[in-house]
View (cartoon, rainbow, N blue to C red):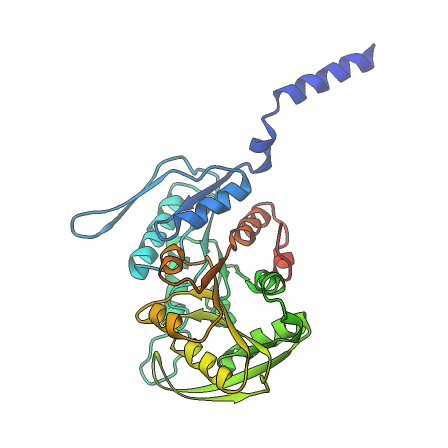
Length: 342
């Protein structure tokens, strides 16, 4: 008799529990800035929650105004904003959103920045040069960010510019998956770095694929202009896969592809994490001897893909969504460094 009463109590309590969707991700809010709403939507779809209500607008004097449309008190807040498009406006918008959530008593505010702005200004390479990446790190911390999630930082040392935790995710697992599914003769291919700085990234991919790698040494006369290139390695009669963390004006990638074809490569693919594609980039790619230019969607690519049929896109929203889920639940994120979540 007593056991029956206890069983009825348990059943009643189970009936009063909220739905599985509500219990899965409690106390979490994901907001999107205006730089990449499509990626933010993909992240929340993956998490099975709704995007938080926020209104971003500009006053007539071009000041940014942000209105958070729902309570964040005691919540674990994630703000998705990529360093693309109008970079300075988007960065300012992110800072205002972080601060708005922080002073509205959010328990933790995490900035999800798929493409970190000013990442290339990470060292003092000439007299009186600013280290702007460090400045951005400082202002993100001062605005109230407790944690940063980003992807393929230009230099991983940028993590050391912060005094708060930084999770630098890698696009490498998604890149490996794309190579195996889309390049038929990948087992006999050669992975090439277009500059010495990317050697570590390329050797890691070559090891995982069990193929050889080559290196192109370049000398720059000034920013965005490449002077000379020297190929170290044999690419004759093989498919070459150029790998880099970002492409801006695409001068380096297109010159490198030319150099590889001259050296006897059969086909050249370019795989990049961040496809910025500013200035003459699209026309350069269209005229270059590249089979395909593969980028991730850390930066919006719809318009670029319409203008250039060679550009293909890898979706990394599942990696960012999984990083958010694991961070929220206090789980390890290191699984994502070598695996693509399905």
